[in-house]
Length: 350
Length: 152
Image (cartoon, rainbow over all chains, first blue to last red; front, side, top):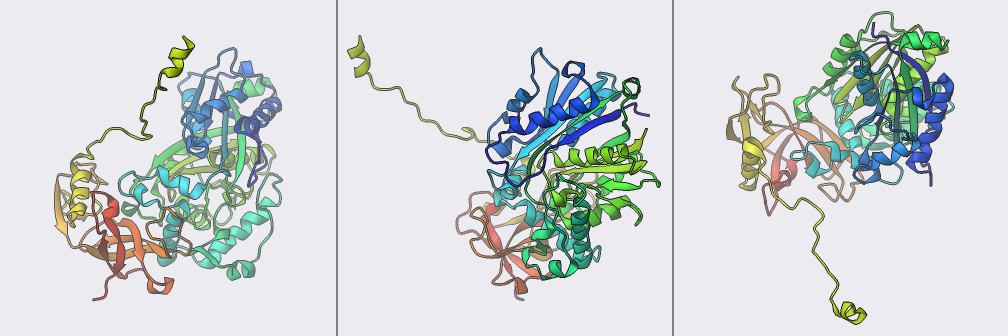
């Protein structure tokens, strides 16, 4: 047992353009909401870690401005990952396991609307073989989708089913960005975007922020807080060279899930699949059965805040467990092109 | 005093936004990109005897250092592709094109690049393509202007 409890999660509405709201104004409400929901004061939190990308704001150390939302006086212990905030949670998880801290606040934020996100993401690629060509994130995902279709790992109809399920689930999620139901016929009639992908196969570009609080199970019990128990987390990476990977499989996600404690009683999975074929790929790679409820929040296809969407998968699954919807759940976060990096969290009801 | 200050020219200094130094790309990438400049595709020879393009610095599975590079034909097969109907200003080609993963003849691995084609219908997995060299080459992956259909 890890003795780590998720006691609170807050998410701002995911929107295409947050307008003139700056990052601090996006972060502060979710931090306040997450702390108020669990009754912990700022001074009770041992450690704070955030996830964001300075490339979205186009300024080095732009993330430091986010600390203004915390109220960093008296001085706090704080850290940042230039990754999805799921990895900020992972840093806190490791510090909890090491006994360094007993509680943590994690937040992730992204305001992608001012730039061209698919092109900005080309800056994360190998700087010699890939980045000079500026391949955007949708094109790289489309190469993976073609490989899936060619290999018979999925069909066009199955990709449509993923989109239909996302929209159906998102209708229960008031913070989702895309909630309009679609039919198989509508999706079949849609024109190609970057073939074989259509726009509906791609996650929307979203502005937003999320926050999550963890503490020891004993503290949660003392305070009478309902919580979701973190059974385990693990992170695995594949080659940064796309041409040296099997794009139709995800051994890194499979290994991470196994190490995090994947078991046969999982009832629901929040999969961070920004493209429809990736949800199918992850289900296959993780060996999830037909009975597993996929993306009850709507998933990344219903809203994908850069650097918060992975944390949202974990927070959404914890919230579903706290509501009593499930006893055992899996949450997955990804980073990099074509599911290069994968982080899997196994959760259970306390 | 004020007059003296007004007579002085304002202090100025040139500023270049970027790295003001050059660096070596190391023993493998440097040789591969220099090869492209010279119109030659070099593959990495692994200890198991297979050839890899583009050459990684270390063998993907064993992690052993790559030491040997050798020339291979500048042609190969499309493993996967997608069609860009509205290229952005940063794309390698300024009209509709395909991104392709190309496996070079007799090699393992695949290289990402653009494929020039007139229409989506001309592109398919398994098709033969060859390198179209850039007219001026400097030792960069863009020394390959793109791939083109290889009619045999």
